[in-house]
Length: 122
Image (cartoon, rainbow, N blue to C red; front, side):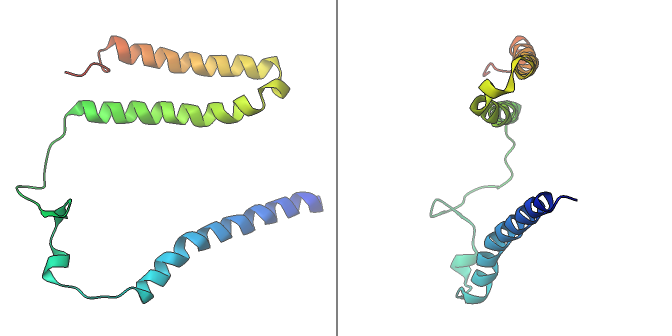
């Protein structure tokens, strides 16, 4: 194995461990350092500083979920497009064809959702 290649994996591993540590360390530190003064007012549920009224179980309309899924779909699309856009000149014609096929598949899905009426608010 090439030592430079192993060094790159070591760098990624150290970076992963550091990111996990930096994410978990404040949570553990807060568990030990934060003051603990439980009371009835702190344990009661509230919304925007006011006591909640009514049942907490509310059924949402299906359109909310569809819009959320479509947002996630197109958000992920941007995640794939951004790195490609940064290096597209050096990738050549094959990469251009691949991204056009990718966008075509997403476009077909968007047109399908549009024709089914999933994007219309009722």
